[in-house]
Length: 330
Image 1 (cartoon, rainbow, N blue to C red):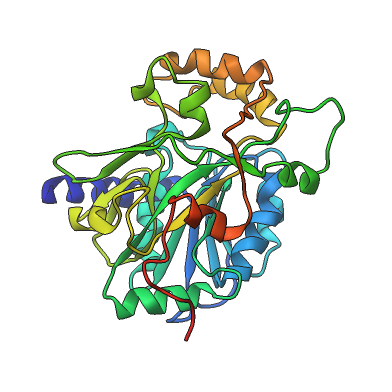
Image 2: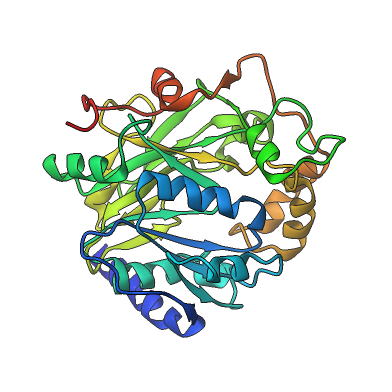
């Protein structure tokens, strides 16, 4: 495992040559909470994504734009709290962006609490209606916990993904208010000891005949980063392997969070056509042609067992995350 970690770090170091620095204002404060992301063509959700995490307490966003042509890079370059790099190198060739984020995390994140996200993920945690990220990481430091586990909770609308009438960005996001609560399963994989959680709406709708193909939903998005750490497979697993013991999945009573997955905006129908041709998002793209075809058909994902999202409490009540005995800021 140490050899694997060093190999990942070497890949990350080498990948720095893919990145072109665009802008970044001021020094990063010693106690800053940082967010890292790689994205492409996310203009429809970027302002909401930035504002959501600013409200939580992110001090600086370190972002790689991978060849956007929808204005994402230009919008990011105008933000005073964003440090931006661009690249047109292969997303798949960079291990789906992880080489780039591993480099930036080790270059800029060491010693900081770092939140590593996709642009379609909104981080939430217990008591976030009155607690900030600074309150949360203070509690994690008090418990001497170096990472926080989270479930990617896939949100979806009621009705077809792309409704007959066009919606503005805010209205499209507001439709994503339903989630699956009771179809999750967890396994522990060797040798990393990483957890493998599957379930949710994509498991129920798109992969019910081949559940092993269903997406992996557990992540370690929030880590007190140390130089030499590395993400292995997205943020699903990390090295050193002890980081993967932070959370066992739904039902684990330890303090945890969630990532609200806003994938199913109306644009997913057209984006599925594009991504089916780009073949950049899966290790075996040909195995997911039926998945893309089903999305292109503009399905209705809602079912009678769906639950409505109503703040962090609704996720905790469903057992998808836990306050772990934490009552919020003191």
